[in-house]
Length: 163
Image (cartoon, rainbow, N blue to C red; front, side, top):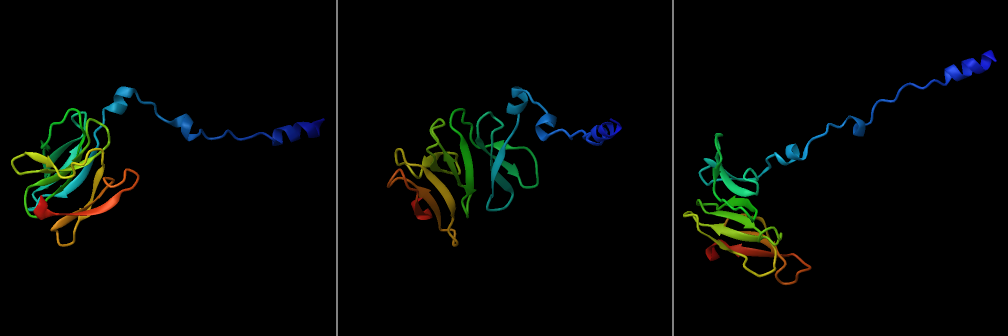
């Protein structure tokens, strides 16, 4: 009988540490929604500003911020279509950005002139276009688009002389 008691005591298990799920902190939906996301990052030609996107207005818009730090300056003020900064032009203050049509995720690439006016560089209805990169000589940029066939993203090059 005494042997059985020692055997039972010898099988005593140490308490397991809590799992990650058991120790996760809970947040309210208000706390989850009250966050700011910042993306992008393109220096102006004189390197004094950075072009970024942020959802601080409740939807993504484009902003500039001094390279030395400071306040964000809104460039766009959309309340329905997300605006994502792509890049300053290599030699001037014009900007490339992408935007969809009220959340449909069919992005087009836009050119914003220095006066703030803008136009769609990829106006093909129903076709999605995404910026890839500037050419090495900075006279063009490469982008993908499914304008030829909705099932495939093809590679295109847009010469800045067209812009």
